[in-house]
Amino acid sequence: MTSAYDFSRRFAALDDINRGMREKAERERKAAEATIELNEQTKIQNQLLREQNQRLNETIMQLKDQHGNKSLPSTANASYQFDVFVSHANDNKEEFVNALTAELSRLGISIWYDANILDWGDNWKLQIANGLKKCRFGIVVVSPEFLGREWTEKELNELLQRQNETGEKVILPLLYKLTISDMKKRYPQLADFQARIIAPNDDVRDIVIDFARILIRALKG
Image (cartoon, rainbow, N blue to C red):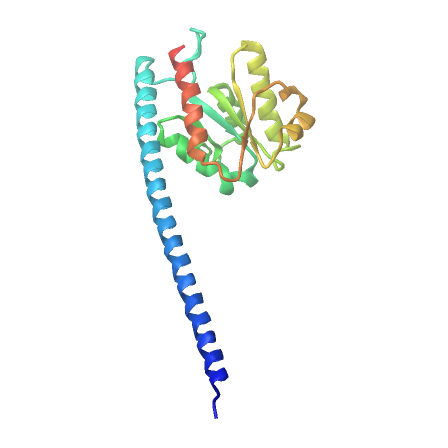
Protein backbone atom coordinates (compact mmCIF):
# COMPACT_ATOMS: atom_id res chain seq x y z
CA MET A 1 0.00 0.00 0.00
CA THR A 2 1.36 3.37 -1.04
CA SER A 3 1.78 5.78 1.81
CA ALA A 4 1.28 9.53 1.79
CA TYR A 5 5.03 9.82 2.15
CA ASP A 6 5.58 7.84 -1.07
CA PHE A 7 3.08 10.04 -2.94
CA SER A 8 4.83 13.11 -1.65
CA ARG A 9 8.18 11.82 -2.87
CA ARG A 10 6.75 11.02 -6.30
CA PHE A 11 5.16 14.45 -6.64
CA ALA A 12 8.43 16.08 -5.58
CA ALA A 13 10.32 14.02 -8.16
CA LEU A 14 7.81 14.96 -10.88
CA ASP A 15 8.07 18.60 -9.86
CA ASP A 16 11.87 18.41 -10.16
CA ILE A 17 11.53 16.83 -13.62
CA ASN A 18 9.08 19.51 -14.76
CA ARG A 19 11.29 22.25 -13.36
CA GLY A 20 14.28 20.77 -15.16
CA MET A 21 12.33 20.61 -18.43
CA ARG A 22 11.19 24.22 -18.06
CA GLU A 23 14.73 25.38 -17.35
CA LYS A 24 16.02 23.42 -20.35
CA ALA A 25 13.33 24.92 -22.59
CA GLU A 26 14.23 28.42 -21.34
CA ARG A 27 17.92 27.83 -22.05
CA GLU A 28 17.09 26.59 -25.54
CA ARG A 29 14.85 29.60 -26.15
CA LYS A 30 17.59 32.02 -25.10
CA ALA A 31 20.16 30.16 -27.20
CA ALA A 32 17.85 30.36 -30.23
CA GLU A 33 17.35 34.11 -29.69
CA ALA A 34 21.10 34.62 -29.34
CA THR A 35 21.70 32.66 -32.56
CA ILE A 36 19.14 34.77 -34.42
CA GLU A 37 20.73 37.98 -33.11
CA LEU A 38 24.22 36.76 -34.05
CA ASN A 39 23.05 35.84 -37.54
CA GLU A 40 21.52 39.29 -37.97
CA GLN A 41 24.72 40.97 -36.80
CA THR A 42 26.74 38.77 -39.16
CA LYS A 43 24.49 39.72 -42.06
CA ILE A 44 24.93 43.40 -41.26
CA GLN A 45 28.71 43.05 -40.96
CA ASN A 46 28.89 41.11 -44.23
CA GLN A 47 26.82 43.76 -45.97
CA LEU A 48 29.08 46.52 -44.65
CA LEU A 49 32.13 44.58 -45.82
CA ARG A 50 30.60 44.10 -49.27
CA GLU A 51 29.85 47.81 -49.54
CA GLN A 52 33.37 48.70 -48.38
CA ASN A 53 34.86 46.22 -50.84
CA GLN A 54 32.80 47.73 -53.64
CA ARG A 55 34.02 51.24 -52.84
CA LEU A 56 37.64 50.06 -52.68
CA ASN A 57 37.27 48.14 -55.94
CA GLU A 58 35.85 51.21 -57.70
CA THR A 59 38.68 53.39 -56.38
CA ILE A 60 41.36 50.90 -57.46
CA MET A 61 39.86 50.54 -60.94
CA GLN A 62 39.58 54.31 -61.40
CA LEU A 63 43.19 54.86 -60.38
CA LYS A 64 44.42 52.06 -62.64
CA ASP A 65 42.46 53.50 -65.57
CA GLN A 66 44.25 56.79 -65.03
CA HIS A 67 47.57 54.93 -65.38
CA GLY A 68 46.73 52.69 -68.30
CA ASN A 69 45.42 49.91 -66.02
CA LYS A 70 48.88 49.34 -64.51
CA SER A 71 50.06 49.70 -60.96
CA LEU A 72 52.71 52.41 -61.28
CA PRO A 73 55.60 53.07 -58.92
CA SER A 74 56.71 56.58 -58.10
CA THR A 75 59.61 56.23 -60.54
CA ALA A 76 58.45 57.38 -63.97
CA ASN A 77 60.65 55.03 -65.99
CA ALA A 78 59.08 51.76 -64.88
CA SER A 79 55.70 50.09 -64.49
CA TYR A 80 54.53 47.07 -62.58
CA GLN A 81 52.46 44.38 -64.23
CA PHE A 82 51.11 43.08 -60.90
CA ASP A 83 49.99 44.82 -57.74
CA VAL A 84 51.34 42.16 -55.41
CA PHE A 85 53.47 39.04 -55.29
CA VAL A 86 52.32 36.53 -52.65
CA SER A 87 55.33 34.74 -51.18
CA HIS A 88 54.36 31.70 -49.13
CA ALA A 89 55.07 28.09 -48.29
CA ASN A 90 53.11 25.55 -50.34
CA ASP A 91 51.95 23.89 -47.12
CA ASN A 92 49.89 27.00 -46.32
CA LYS A 93 48.00 27.17 -49.61
CA GLU A 94 44.89 25.20 -48.72
CA GLU A 95 44.46 26.45 -45.18
CA PHE A 96 45.08 30.16 -45.81
CA VAL A 97 46.78 31.49 -48.94
CA ASN A 98 44.13 30.38 -51.45
CA ALA A 99 41.46 32.29 -49.50
CA LEU A 100 43.71 35.35 -49.28
CA THR A 101 44.41 35.47 -53.02
CA ALA A 102 40.75 34.84 -53.87
CA GLU A 103 39.68 37.86 -51.81
CA LEU A 104 42.45 40.00 -53.33
CA SER A 105 41.23 39.10 -56.81
CA ARG A 106 37.65 40.03 -55.94
CA LEU A 107 38.81 43.59 -55.29
CA GLY A 108 40.38 43.85 -58.73
CA ILE A 109 43.91 43.53 -57.33
CA SER A 110 46.27 41.87 -59.79
CA ILE A 111 48.30 39.12 -58.13
CA TRP A 112 51.35 37.08 -58.97
CA TYR A 113 50.39 33.79 -57.35
CA ASP A 114 52.09 30.65 -58.57
CA ALA A 115 48.90 28.56 -58.50
CA ASN A 116 47.31 30.98 -60.99
CA ILE A 117 50.40 31.88 -63.06
CA LEU A 118 52.50 28.78 -63.62
CA ASP A 119 51.51 26.51 -66.50
CA TRP A 120 52.62 23.05 -67.48
CA GLY A 121 56.16 23.21 -68.85
CA ASP A 122 56.98 26.66 -67.47
CA ASN A 123 60.45 27.33 -66.10
CA TRP A 124 59.15 28.10 -62.61
CA LYS A 125 62.42 29.57 -61.34
CA LEU A 126 62.51 32.07 -64.20
CA GLN A 127 58.81 32.85 -63.82
CA ILE A 128 59.20 33.55 -60.10
CA ALA A 129 62.24 35.77 -60.71
CA ASN A 130 60.34 37.77 -63.33
CA GLY A 131 57.24 37.94 -61.15
CA LEU A 132 59.19 39.44 -58.26
CA LYS A 133 60.45 42.22 -60.51
CA LYS A 134 57.02 43.02 -61.93
CA CYS A 135 55.11 43.38 -58.65
CA ARG A 136 54.59 46.61 -56.74
CA PHE A 137 54.34 44.91 -53.34
CA GLY A 138 55.22 41.58 -51.83
CA ILE A 139 52.94 40.05 -49.21
CA VAL A 140 55.20 37.59 -47.39
CA VAL A 141 53.25 34.95 -45.46
CA VAL A 142 55.84 34.02 -42.84
CA SER A 143 54.90 30.76 -41.13
CA PRO A 144 56.73 27.82 -39.52
CA GLU A 145 56.57 26.12 -42.93
CA PHE A 146 58.09 29.20 -44.61
CA LEU A 147 61.23 29.15 -42.48
CA GLY A 148 64.38 27.78 -44.00
CA ARG A 149 62.90 26.95 -47.42
CA GLU A 150 65.27 27.71 -50.29
CA TRP A 151 62.83 29.51 -52.55
CA THR A 152 60.79 31.33 -49.95
CA GLU A 153 64.02 32.81 -48.64
CA LYS A 154 65.16 33.72 -52.15
CA GLU A 155 61.87 35.52 -52.70
CA LEU A 156 62.22 37.35 -49.40
CA ASN A 157 65.83 38.37 -50.15
CA GLU A 158 64.85 39.62 -53.62
CA LEU A 159 62.07 41.76 -52.16
CA LEU A 160 64.41 43.06 -49.46
CA GLN A 161 66.98 44.01 -52.07
CA ARG A 162 64.37 45.90 -54.08
CA GLN A 163 63.18 47.77 -51.01
CA ASN A 164 66.72 48.70 -50.02
CA GLU A 165 67.52 49.90 -53.54
CA THR A 166 64.38 51.97 -54.13
CA GLY A 167 63.71 53.13 -50.58
CA GLU A 168 60.01 52.43 -51.19
CA LYS A 169 57.80 50.16 -49.15
CA VAL A 170 57.71 46.78 -50.85
CA ILE A 171 57.50 44.04 -48.20
CA LEU A 172 54.34 43.45 -46.18
CA PRO A 173 55.05 40.70 -43.62
CA LEU A 174 52.05 38.60 -42.65
CA LEU A 175 52.68 36.27 -39.72
CA TYR A 176 50.74 33.02 -39.89
CA LYS A 177 51.03 30.73 -36.85
CA LEU A 178 54.19 32.62 -35.92
CA THR A 179 55.06 35.33 -33.39
CA ILE A 180 56.95 38.54 -34.05
CA SER A 181 59.70 37.24 -31.77
CA ASP A 182 60.02 34.11 -33.93
CA MET A 183 60.19 36.20 -37.07
CA LYS A 184 62.87 38.51 -35.70
CA LYS A 185 64.90 35.56 -34.48
CA ARG A 186 64.88 33.87 -37.89
CA TYR A 187 64.93 37.02 -40.03
CA PRO A 188 66.64 39.85 -38.13
CA GLN A 189 66.54 41.90 -41.34
CA LEU A 190 62.77 42.17 -40.78
CA ALA A 191 63.11 43.29 -37.16
CA ASP A 192 62.14 46.90 -37.95
CA PHE A 193 59.26 46.03 -40.27
CA GLN A 194 55.69 46.50 -39.07
CA ALA A 195 54.24 43.01 -39.39
CA ARG A 196 50.63 41.89 -39.17
CA ILE A 197 49.82 38.85 -37.05
CA ILE A 198 46.97 36.64 -38.20
CA ALA A 199 44.84 35.64 -35.22
CA PRO A 200 42.74 32.45 -35.36
CA ASN A 201 39.49 34.44 -35.58
CA ASP A 202 40.72 36.99 -38.16
CA ASP A 203 38.62 37.49 -41.27
CA VAL A 204 40.81 37.35 -44.36
CA ARG A 205 38.68 40.13 -45.84
CA ASP A 206 40.00 42.56 -43.22
CA ILE A 207 43.55 41.79 -44.30
CA VAL A 208 42.63 42.38 -47.94
CA ILE A 209 40.94 45.70 -47.11
CA ASP A 210 44.09 46.87 -45.33
CA PHE A 211 46.18 45.95 -48.37
CA ALA A 212 43.74 47.70 -50.71
CA ARG A 213 44.17 50.92 -48.76
CA ILE A 214 47.97 50.64 -49.03
CA LEU A 215 47.67 50.01 -52.77
CA ILE A 216 45.36 53.00 -53.25
CA ARG A 217 47.84 55.29 -51.50
CA ALA A 218 50.60 53.97 -53.78
CA LEU A 219 48.49 54.46 -56.91
CA LYS A 220 47.68 58.01 -55.90
CA GLY A 221 51.43 58.57 -55.58
